[in-house]
Length: 233
Image 1 (cartoon, rainbow, N blue to C red):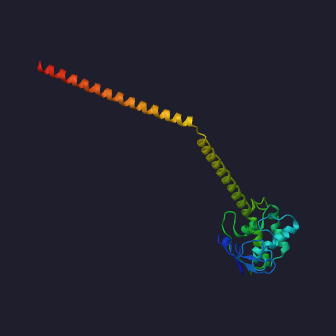
Image 2 (image 1 turned 60 degrees about the horizontal axis):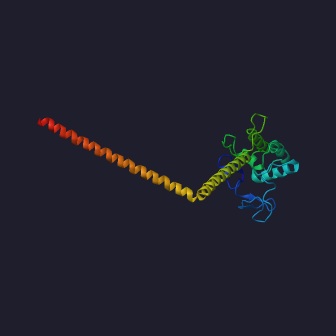
Image 3 (image 1 turned 90 degrees about the vertical axis):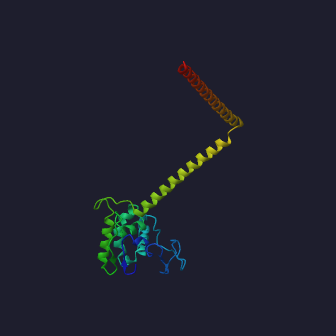
């Protein structure tokens, strides 16, 4: 991020937001993606779990610190004022990752414009307020579901449904296998009997067809002889 914090669809893939984790102890930056420990000093990667909604004032303060670790451009801001701006969203079940997403994109997935750390703190706070405001159904109204949290819940639901369908397919397959193995010798004998009857029926049909063809030929011969006698008379 440095001096600027770019907003848009590219922001979600920027290393500062995804792969690089600022450490809360040594202030170093590591490429380790774990939020549990710093790859440089072993210290905690984040002040608070960015994937969990904070509960209570102490966790909210820690979540604000975690937000500043994600968005360094906000670090010069007054933490009390920033916390007051994001508090409603935390109370609505949002986590830090939800807030970061909302600061990056609108609900229609359109990216926000670039903002700069050179802007006055009041202007940066206004940006935060306005970008979070777009995630309300109406001005001052109900807050939408946190985008990152909602996506994680949807993925969990899809995974559960896929697992259920796979289990149903496995059970059906095992039932078919069990049924095939349970087939008795009598069943196989019945199958042979049916096949034999079908073969006998086919042979009878061929015999009847041959007899009918022979009768037709004999009738043709008699008709020809009759015609010859008539012509000769």
